[in-house]
Amino acid sequence: MNTKQTDLTYVANTYGRFDVALQQGCGATYADEDGKKYIDFGSGIAVNTFGTCDPEWVAAVTDQLNQMGHVSNLYYSAPQARLAQMLCEKTGMKKVFFGNSGAEANECALKIARKYGETTGRSTIVTLKSSFHGRTIATLAATGQDKFHEHFGPFPEGFCYVTPGDTAELTAALTSGQVCGVLMEVVQGEGGVNVLDKDYVQLAAKLCQENDILFMIDEVQTGNGRTGKLYGYMHYDVQPDVFTTAKGLAGGLPMGACIIGEKAESVLGKGDHGSTFGGNPICAAGAVNVLSRLTDELLSDVTAKSEYIRKELEGCPGVKGVTGLGLMLGVATEKSNAQVAADCLRDGLLVLTAKDKVRLLPPLNISFKELQQGIAILKKNL
Image (cartoon, rainbow, N blue to C red):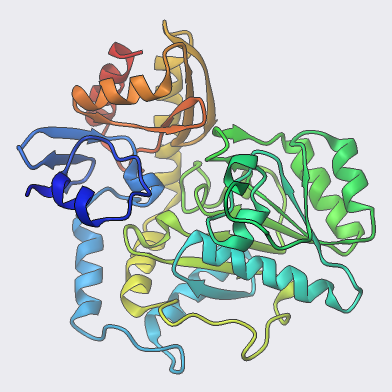
């Protein structure tokens, strides 16, 4: 059997895969089992920050593999400690909890909010409609999309969903006296690459401060340079009490992190939370390499590439609009997004979808030549 047949026979049928078996790659280019090449505008869903098989990242991970692999969190390890220091120093936060995914990072944030509100009898967590926070039972409950709530109930109680941009609804929820935390994405990825209004986010932060509520930002997809800032909330002139990240943090290895500010830094104590693999030295070494390379120059380059894509696509025949920040963009198309993605795949371009849009998440360091080639293929298929 070939790869596709083997997969269909033995792997759980939980993914709607594109009809291609990728075999190898370098940077923003992949090749399938037949040797056909593809320009990557997906980055493994915003994971491969510097593309695939990036030489500097590979060297950092290999060096750690040759020193020490897994060691449990019953012991200290230098890569994890160094990574936590970098995250805190770059964001003004105080503590970090490491897990393996965005869902785990968000689970940690939810637990922090619940314990924070325990002494005052508050347990409700406010999230936004059209949000996505993960596929565990609790993070599904936090997700504000009905389609994700099918089949798997009953869900944990204590979640309230408000409409993005509706300031009256937000104010009513946050002044109810029942809320311990708010969790929001500044760009709703799976919800359709929707960018939140700056005034709305700042109002949420203000209401949280006034009502002793934890202001929490889900940076699972928007984080680590993806939007042209180190973290997406930095576009909004706010400081979260907690933020979560994953995907691009370790550049291709499974790692999630819940980063905790001063208000909540002492909420979790020994035994309150844990992870066997969280902060694994190999993953941490990959993340240290990624964070060390997210310089102001690189972030400016991300913004320039974003502006180029927008210039090429806005007003283009077949395009109804472009949303997003940095290299996290959604393209509303006249054709179905699934058809556009299939046609691009045929012509050697990997793109993603999000609700009714084509989603673009190229590696942050994609060359302008590859970017131009990819955009030309996309425009041809709109």
